[in-house]
Length: 377
Ligand SMILES: [Ca+2]
Ligand SMILES: [Ca+2]
Image 1 (cartoon, rainbow, N blue to C red):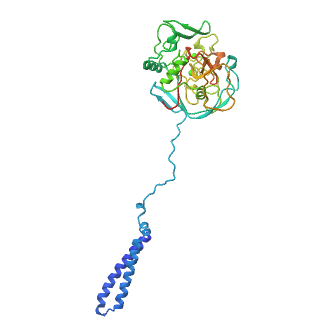
Image 2: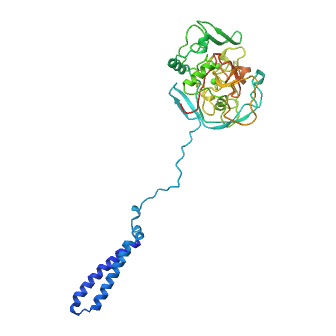
Image 3: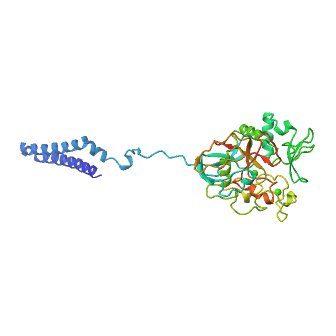
């Protein structure tokens, strides 16, 4: 701005001087001398040179521009904005089967127990060890009968129980599981405890009478796979502590899960508690019992198959592991979380760190499916 004012001042001076010169020249007339004329011409020429110098000076020209008209040069040293990490527990929907899935980011948790509560039954759950897993998505609920029906309608799939004309149901007289084979009344996914008629109205209950083979086929159709044992346990336990149950360390209670209590009507059931369901409950019926990542029924309702086989004796490694590869050599496949048939002295089967297994072709009235996805389905 200062240079601009100087320029205007010089221009004004030149004009004024020319005017005075002209007036003086007129008044002097024939009396003016050649020397006076030459002096004035010299002064005018000097002013003109000064104006020309300023006009040809690029720094003067640039500085004289108004600030608002100056070019804005974009900064080049700012890194591109990083994509924000998706929050743990984010819920999405799998269009293939209509079931909700939950995001679990890459992270570490403590797997297993330091107390060998399950070894007396042939399962080693020790020692506690650190496991790091890549990110994955997992069904928020057990797979429902409605979702499994979509799979059957789309593929014509026939389950092992249907091929074998039956599966295992709870025998109240024997207080134990019993295999029932019958061409007309054998149990299968449409009539989980057998009988001649298919059940109706239970579309939001977890599908059961599902073998490991059936569960694997379903998850593949849905765009995923069965969870590894580590993925299942992390989804149930969370990353912050080594809790025994999805809700924490409080004992099982009838507002937290569907398990074996008064409704199950067994001789050893706790008749002081009543969750309201003799067999399966609609999925997500117990919001007070959700896991830290927001998953329903990780304890109770029905067992859930995982990928891993079990050889009947192996314990966990003592060192930290990353993305453990499920063993294949065991005869049976592991299932997790316990079911509506676990009562009183079997409460430990409802723990998130418990392991249990069955033959991969077997079908039970209290075993179902939960799938995992390596990317958002
Ligand atoms: Ca129950
Ligand atoms: Ca369950």
